[in-house]
Amino acid sequence: MINYPKATEIQQSIFIGTWDDKIPVYHVPSMHALNQLIGYMKHINSLNGTVLYRGQCELYRTVSPCILRDSELKDKNSGQLEKVIDAFLKDKDIMKLLGFRKSQLNGWLLYEKCIVEAVLQHYGAKTFCVDFVDNHWTALWFGLYRWDSDNNKYVERDIWEQDTGTEYIKRDIESQKKTLPKQPDPNSVTLTKNYIQELTQIAASTQQDFNALYNNALKRLYGKELSSWNQKYQKISEYNNAYEETINKLEQEAHLYLFLYVAETNADNIGGLYLGDNTYTIDLRKALPSVFLRPSSQHGWIVRGRSEEFDFNSRICCVIRINVSLVKTLLGNGKLLSQENFFPNEKVDQGYKRLLERQLDVDIKSKYKRIIPAGMIRRF
Image 1 (cartoon, rainbow, N blue to C red):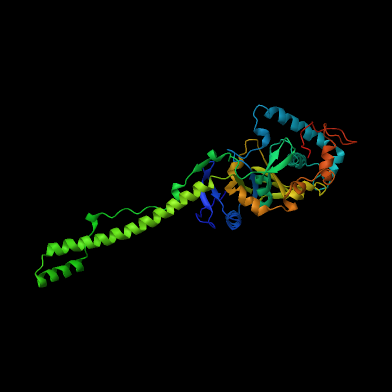
Image 2 (cartoon, one colour):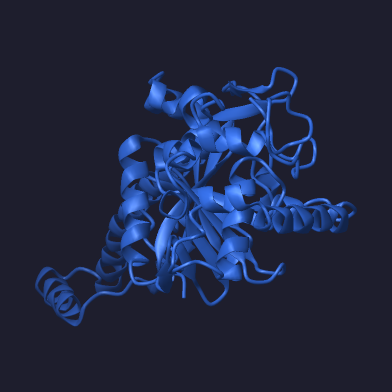
């Protein structure tokens, strides 16, 4: 069971609609709004699993493994992936490096295959896995920086670039506006029994026409109700107009998207692998030795469905949208939030080097068999 946010006001976060028909999308205007919304989602899902993050430059219809995104190449890529995993399992040196010779793990084929596929995914291969992190700063970075294949590096996005994927948000702005009060009906105004008695006494003692007194009293009462209604109507109208104006302003700038995913970690955990009902969830820092530096730099996790048809959307509890300009301010230029840190080269990341030494198109001296096809793992 996944709990979605129900609060409409979370440190001025703005509900703008739903993604995938049911998953709430909030625009956050500040770091306080971001932190509280994340904390809120962790709290209400504390019994359901661990909330992980995925930052994206674009909003797609689904969160899915990259191997499934091209239906025409799926079978080819799947067959290639299977061959590479089998080759890994026959490579004694890489098996030893991955720690598969530990007595608790030795010979457990499911574990070995899951970890090998997770390693390949994390270092750029197309697999049935999806990358997540448990640090939202890291996730924000991946939404702020876009891969530039021409220059082989990540580049910071411009705040005025065209937003992509907003058509997948089902807008529900009207539901967040306050309801305008209905104008009072003059025919519905009535006087109290005591007031009518007072008018009767006045008419008798002053010899005035009771009907005239009665009608004038109705007019005065209706005038007060009409004045009160007009004040409320104006106030709510101004609020709704300001709300709509705010929403329109938010659309004028590029955004990034932060997906909050509830991982199945309320399950047996062995060597960093959580055996959920529908997924295999891997904390890479537990599963891999520290010679693989990238997982530690990125706070990396991997999730794989037990079946290819697993719907990752089904465990996403919230989508957070943030202005690119705000994220630029929040992250700044610290080296911990840089490509240099998140993607250390093979001279620093020895696990990465061991992978590249086994790839066909890499000009690194190697004593190992080239079991990884050319281009499977991206080289920075």
